[in-house]
Image 1 (spheres, rainbow, N blue to C red):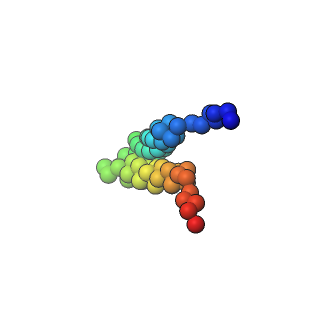
Image 2 (cartoon, rainbow, N blue to C red):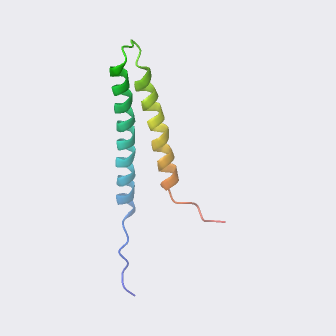
Image 3 (spheres, rainbow, N blue to C red):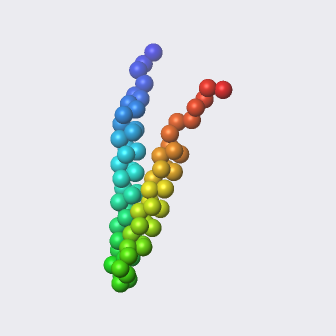
Length: 71
């Protein structure tokens, strides 16, 4: 039988880590940008963008993890 070209698991997890970093960085930058447009003392949009992007990053992580098929 020929050997399958299977991607190692650590490569998949490195890709997931970079996706999470990109999502969180983008959400934080958008929040920072909105705070710079408004003259507020407390960074409401920065915190909102950061928290929403963290939730989205974890949602993406849990969605992409393999399902347990031991039924």
